[in-house]
Length: 160
Image 1: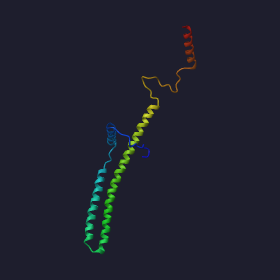
Image 2 (image 1 turned 135 degrees about the horizontal axis):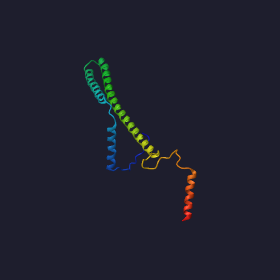
Image 3 (image 1 turned 180 degrees about the horizontal axis):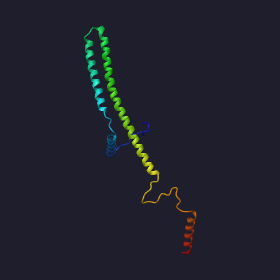
Image 4 (image 1 turned 90 degrees about the vertical axis):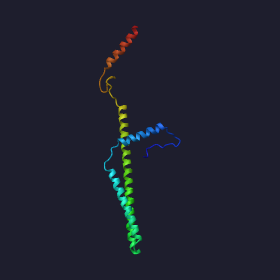
């Protein structure tokens, strides 16, 4: 995102500008196809994290109620459960960030496509059925016909 312009802190936006930007963002969100199964993955991550935290709590309680020589292994297992819960939450957040990144890339590609279409329409000659005919690569008249027209105009001007 290095190609984004720096925003001056003194620049202010009107409510119309903000509403237009929000409408564009909503339109992008609505236009992006939804991938099925993502919500299921979120639920799975949440369930795994919940079970890991419950197991962590149970293991900590167990570690407090056993002999000291056995508590180290139990607390080690509890630590593993907590890292599993943190990994599940982190993976869920990373997945969401990746989806946002993909949506932004798609929006950028769509914007570039619109830009190319605009430039193509602007720079390429598009024939208008009511306008003049396209003449690229076609002979309209010859040099002799042009000279005859000029001489006829000169003669007409001389006669008047």
